[in-house]
Structures are given as structure tokens and as C-alpha cells.
Length: 415
Ligand code: GLU
Image (cartoon, rainbow, N blue to C red):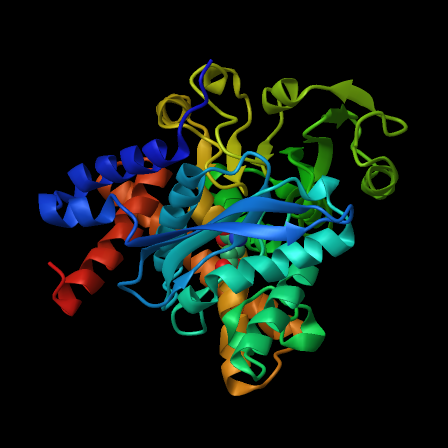
């Protein structure tokens, strides 16, 4: 079976929205393609003395609302089309949260699990050496994404600052707090998603204290989401999974044990006092809330009708295909679409930029409060649009986000 192309999916979602908004064809055509993209070859000296050339990308999708913004992924299966799709989704995400930013994304084809710390540092710095003319605080601001983290952002900040001859904190976000990062950025994606789940639970009549949760994907986002579901709501997390498989306990998992086990063995599989479960089985569990926190295209036309959860929270980017979307909608599953549900990360990244500009640090409480207010407001804006137009939550998120980008393009005189 050929894998769905994420960029074709992103374009299809946009085409659907263009019909609802009755967009002019010229406006629609601009929005269907990235504004600019850079392909780079990155030579890196490996520990064995040889030089390996990695392929990398940076896509700037649309900057009508402000400088482009979005993470950098290090992944063995990275492709230009994945980066294009993610850059498009960043455009809609920043717009939906009403941030003064456009959308972009970067990627390097590599397997960080097979690189030494030294190789990873040299690759991170070399990526910046290749793209630095293209990025900057008021041009395009990278951040962490799949398999990149605050340490990698620190190396990238350092490399960019060395080239510039001065500290430029604003060139990247998701930095460690002691070098211009923001409190609360580490778990911001998961926490932001929790605020939308809390609001969605009111709409779907789910009592979060009694709710059961299954989480597909146990990286930074999935792991934080599990802990937060328990801490903020008292919900019971009964299943989690990673790329190697999953674990289940109907009475609720001991999350601390699962975390320690994963740190020791690099997977949750076989952690004590759990039953094994496959990724496919996890998605079909009879739980109140299903959280997709891994990669694209896991909910497709083949499994969508088997999903029993009342709510699907998409903390990953692009986990659901358009065919699956229609099935979930008909079956009454309340979907919190990706670029709404996972917007907490870029929202705190934006807070980080604001703090960097004013050289002032907000407290953790201030960050949480502002994040909650932005996420809750965005959720209700989408919910209202879905009711007003009688469309599903993803279509509604598109209508709001794309509508704002189109308005910015009109005001600038692009169309
Ligand atoms: N990579 C995250 C995302 O997909 C965060 C992006 C950012 O902070 O710029 O939303």
C-alpha cells in the first residue's frame, strides 16, 4: 500500500475550505503552494572520520500575517512533501491562534537515534550554516519538532549568533530557559491540547474525572499529555504506545513506571504490570478520549469506522486522512483538529519571542494563564464556526484560519 502524500492531503483540505469560503481561483492558487523553499546538502564529519552528506529543507509557506514560523524535524523518512504539508499547517495554526506570524517548517533526513551527541551537534550547526541567510527573527523562526529538542535549539542559536557576531535570541524558539527560552515551553504542546480537551469535554458531555484515555505516541508530547490528563483532570490513562508497540492496563497505567521503563529500554513495550497492545488495537479501544500524538496518517478510511472514542484530540500533525475525517464526523466523534489541538507549542514559542524582544521573563503561571486564554478562545471560535456553517471541526478551523490569511493578503494588495 502506498503511503498517502501529506502535502496532497493538506492541499485537499484547503480545496475543501476554498469551496466553503467560495475563494477566488487566484487566491486559492496562491494558498495551494509554498511561497519559497530551500533544499540543502549538509556535509557533516562523522565520528569515524568520514563525511556524510545529509539532505535538508526549509519551506516558507506564507508570510502574509507575519514572519514564517515552525519547527525543524530530524527524521529518517523526512520528505519535501511532508515539510511542505507541515509548513502549510503552521500557516493555518498561527493564523487560528491569531499570532502575528506566518507558517514554515524545516527538516533533515537523518536518524538521530543512530547519531552520537557530537554528530548531532555538528549536524545541527551545519544545518544553520546552510540556511542562516534564509532565517532570522523577523524573517523565519525555527523551533523544535519531532526528534529535535531544546539542546539542539541551543546549538542552533549559538551557531546563528556566531555568524551574526552577537547574541540573537529571537532567531529560534524552544531554547533552554537560561539562554532565552520561555518557562513552560517544554510541555506547551501537550498542555495547550489539554485546555482544548477541557473545553471539548463540556461540549461532548464527558466527565473528565471519570474519563478513560488512550495515547498513541509516547515522545515528548504524548508523555507530557499522559501526566497532564491525570494531574489536571484526574482522568485514567489506560493505554500508551510508541513506534515499537503499546501497553494497556484497564485500571490505569502507572505512568511513572512506564516512563522509567521507556528511559531504560527506549520503548514502553513490556513495561511491568501491563498487557501488550498494538498501535492499531490502541486506536480502536473503547475509551472516552483518544489522543493521537505520533506522526501523520494513522487514522485512515480503513480504521476510522472502528474508532470508539467519543473524542479524538490530535496532538500530532496530520494524523487523520480526509476520508477518515468524513467517517468520524458521521459517527459523531468530536475531533479537535491538529492545528488547533497542538497549537500550544507555537503559542508559547510566540510568547518566547515577545519575552526575547523585551528582555524580560514571565513566570510559569503567567505563561499558563495566557496559553489557556489563547487556546480556549481558539477552540470556541472553531466550535462556533462549525455550528454556524454546519461543518466539521477541521473544516471550521480551516475556515477561520484561511479566512484571516486571505484578509491579510487582500490588505497587502497581493490579490
Ligand atoms: N513544531 C511545533 C509545531 O508543529 C512548534 C512550532 C514552533 O514552536 O514554532 O507546532
